[in-house]
Length: 358
Image (cartoon, rainbow, N blue to C red; front, top):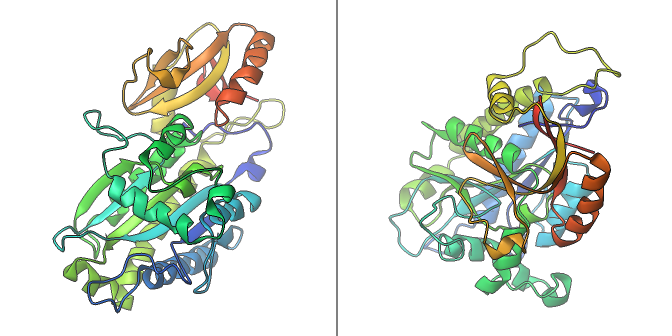
């Protein structure tokens, strides 16, 4: 649900988007089998085309690129650039690769646990995750900068799995729109939407997606990516996804009654459906720590002994702890919970559904 702060609607519209061209400089990213073509070249080309399209169509939107040249940007700095810019959407563009030449197609990734309940987070799709995170190893003194995080060690991802993105719902919405817009495009095969622990998604404080636009290791995908017209097509499809998400974002603003009159336009169907499913007559307050597409056992160690209240909204389960009918008591609990779950936030559960609460 697109729950937003209660301030003037015009100020809350999507005004800043951050586009991240994966890799760059000494970090070539994935390399073609003949060693002549680099991922970093394609990502910058598509990112630039997308940025130019947004600037032309939406002059009031600030477009921030983590890099606009063939420059090496540390992984943590990509997220830092996005956060400092006050980004409201983060799109990271990449090209996939595999040892085999047969895999092809596009995929969209958001932060989280594996969307396949029969697979373990750390065993599934980890080759891609490790490769995209491995740029850390090119940085000087990376073990200090990343506080011991080792992209080659699966144990390093355990803590990340606990710190679910507070913007998971919006990220999932963006991913769904992008996946739909890419259908029928130059890169034909749809590999779906994945939840994976990419560092750059973990550290961005906004809805964030990572898009893998084809396989540089596949000859068909590679020949498509080498064509400027095809890259423009891909950028145009990403722009159409941005446009649809922005329209949803801007039209879903929840304006406080004291500051603005309710909009005459009805809320999008998706928002109405969310409110209906989570509706309750009793107003309660709590802290949302996770949002996951799979059912998590209440005895799971990730809950650190807390007994979560689970609220199902569509395909997502919201895990809320520290629940109380007293706002004051919920805030006291939140102060303690926040220390254990830095990505958590307060929510209000009532007649209007589950909304983020300040």
